[in-house]
Image 1 (tube, rainbow, N blue to C red):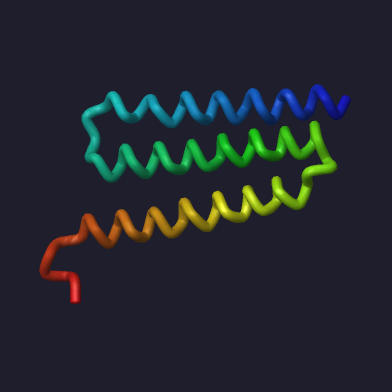
Image 2 (cartoon, rainbow, N blue to C red):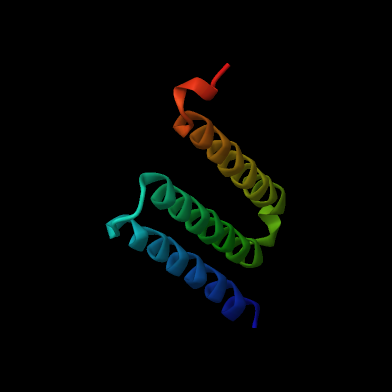
Amino acid sequence: MIDLFSYTCIGVGIVFWFWGTLPLVGNRSVLFKLHSLSVADTLGSMSIIVGLLLKIPSEWPLLILSIISLAIWNTVLGYVLAYCSSSEGDHE
């Protein structure tokens, strides 16, 4: 039962990865494309890590650290992209 749930989490993560690439083909702004790609990649990666956590629970410290690092990195990256995309007059 754990194996089935583990493979399901990994499969959902891969689906999120591919789903995040679909907006790249659209006519939206670059920031919209980056946002949707980063959100889908973050959710997909976290889902894959949860699947791995269920598969190899002996590595839980490393996998939990990777989930936390992934969440912090993508949040900070979003703020940096938003700051860099704002107009030149807004920067101090």
